Image 1 (cartoon, rainbow, N blue to C red):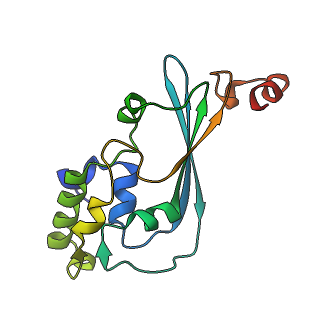
Image 2: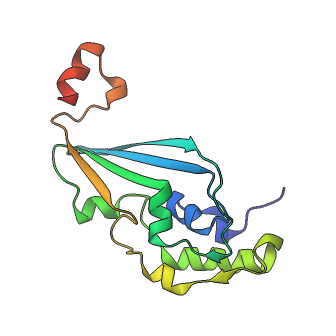
Length: 154
């Protein structure tokens, strides 16, 4: 296959979603925070391909259709927490990837790049609405014994 170009090799999950011609998965990301670290899990569900995108990047509504973010932990995430997440969008990376694809990939040659869609996203907060569920502990559910799980989920 060859080397992956610099414009494509360091894209984050959300950035890949934004430049994809079609979405074949729905992704739910759970991020657990504690005083010292974050744990993240992503669950991906297959879905039928509803449409082929000829205008990219995807809009905020289109990204919201295929991505959900859930925070758990003793307190709500802060702006500092957001900065540490690989879910934030880097607009310059998205734009560089789309320009590279338009020049080098035959399926992207007729692509219309919508800068208005890119402006819908913030670079300092998650790209979609996110949810918070309070959790007293900081142990990931996978590492807890069966008897402890009920206490953590309550």
